[in-house]
Length: 492
Image 1 (cartoon, rainbow, N blue to C red):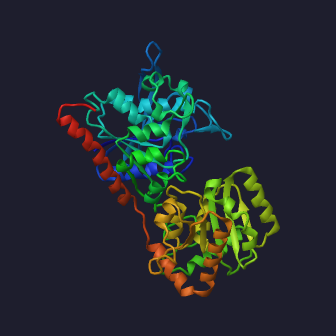
Image 2 (image 1 turned 120 degrees about the horizontal axis):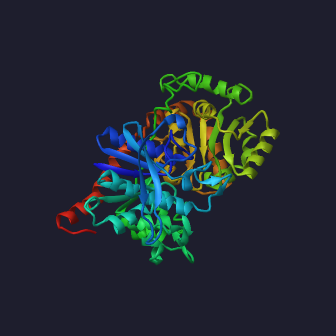
Image 3 (image 1 turned 90 degrees about the horizontal axis):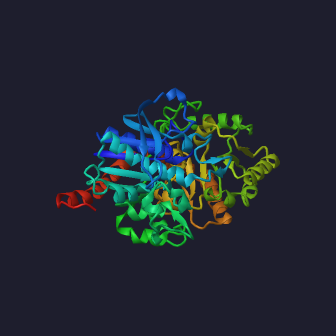
């Protein structure tokens, strides 16, 4: 298949979150299986110049009638078996950060990413690239399915092109004033109630969900949650409307970087057959965090300090938990108020609790390798990756049973034989505390069972080749709609 993959970030080029990891790993696997994969993303000014992409051409994107077009350049960069087309347009992407300036979103983000979606399809015209699938990701590129159908659907180049939208986090929807979409006349000059949101605003994500041939999110449970009033972030009716073309596909995990057998950032490598070496990792982690080097169980956490990640569930009970003979290590940055509170707790319990706000990749690996348990009490979690890393390192996750966490961690009480961790349902601090205490008691009283669960966890794998197979099935379903129409001599 010819696949055009649209993303706002990609690991190794520009990254702020998990989308960047998916945008590299999935095209890499698709290319490995022989599919012609082209990834389109912005050429941000923050991109490392050492990458040295090759310029492929200068083009002009036609916009509204009687308005000047937008000049842009396309640079090409080979990455892991696929090709990245970098869209260089200084008026939109010559900025210090991808989306914001010190936490304040750029006010023209709607215009910036509307341009990206339109330019991605314009590039195909200039390069005569006829995709079988246009795959958009999150709100940043969610306008592409609509532009594809309304502007290009009857052209020979795109007549048989299907479209897919992947929602990585449904809470971010891209709601912007219609005036920012002047460069997309199909939207700017045509009012459509179904994609509007309050006054003159357009909801980019709604647009993608309604116009894409197939829609998915990054775990089956999160797909179900999005269709509920509680979990749909105000869009549950839209998801329900698309239910027959909506699915959940669990992300894969890149075990190249996260593998205790080969990890270069931990003091000693280990497998399920040499788990005694995990104690060495724990003792080095304790030294690194200036905690007493001892045999107390270590509970770890690496996350963004936001409400979504459940840190507000932990804070009210963390000092109660520290009354037990345990050590707790947290690495995370975000909300300054949460950072300040964690610093206060660390100062009050220096022999039991360590907190650091600065992200350190080595420390993140050490926490995964040296902890006995890993905390992920998220209020919602589309997929999650840290629980997958934890499983690989024999560090049992303690998670809230939502989204991808529910799909990837098997609770001990739910399934003793196949269990890989512990989970709780209610988004309450006392529920988290109970689960942490349950895990602690299990560790102290059932050492053989704890070891068996570690082995279960380390055998668990979420490979990208499996996820890619599900994406290819979805691609074929989307493309088949237009192949049938093309054979009948019609458009869309």
